[in-house]
Image 1 (cartoon, rainbow, N blue to C red):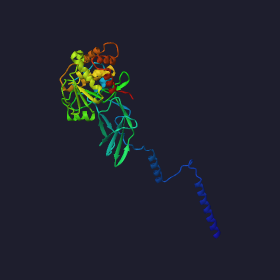
Image 2 (image 1 turned 30 degrees about the vertical axis):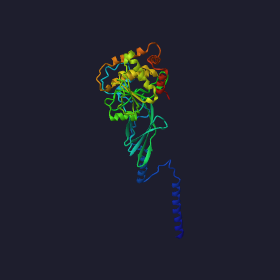
Image 3 (image 1 turned 90 degrees about the vertical axis):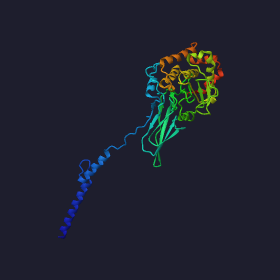
Image 4 (image 1 turned 120 degrees about the vertical axis):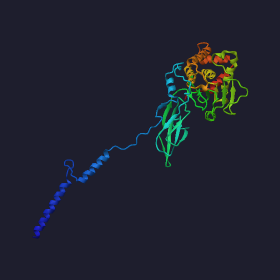
Length: 387
């Protein structure tokens, strides 16, 4: 009896070992693996987790777009310059102020406590201007046309800083209009490339209408931001006159010629007198004006730009921008095409031979009493190499 029990025990043991051995050697690649219902659910959940796309935040609009070109002028002026034709403003001009510059809008999104915007003309962000912003956007004025800018944000949240990548944009190469509160028809003569490959410096010479409606904000903008040191008033010569910009501003006044009357004897000394202001480096930056900022101002701008070697189209464009302005608020509805013909008549007076315009202008001014040294000083003060 004891023997039979032992045999039975041994047979059962052998059967168990045989089953165990078969399980260990099973090929999962050729036979399906069975699982419980719970195990099947678990495997399915894991598969869903792996294949489901990652959730991302919607893209944030960043302006200006990286690598874009931005115009600092309104749409109408931008389109006019794009398709410029001399003296074709009669149907566009409505004698309202439209030449004020358009600020550049920067947007970067996010919910930072505050942000510092860094703006530089250098790709390594050296010498960057810094703007403290309380939101996620800011508008910046007084940028230079025809310039590549680089910008970056440093956003601060809960005491931690997040620095963005460096982005860039270019401003459209165009005349630089300027905003001075209470003053119309203002622009910077700088930025134009001359016949000899030089560039007229920005921020040195401004032209515009008079200061009859200048506000305190406008005075601060002219003096503290633009740095104007000299006012040249072309309306009438005034003894011991003073500038409304302040007692520290140099003031010169001249009864200035305009267009064809520049050949009259009474105006010859006046033309030389007004141009001599630009020969003194201590006078810069200079603001010159008449009443509208168009005729006497346009005549002086013609001589300055011609002497410096500006392209004739650039000279005409600079002149015609006045017709996008209310020109000091004075009532003058003369057709732009007629006024452009007046400037053209001045060019013909100066161009006595087939030489280049800047050569004829120099010869003309020498006849009017200016010296080579004075003319060279003007060019030295206002021209720079293109980087």
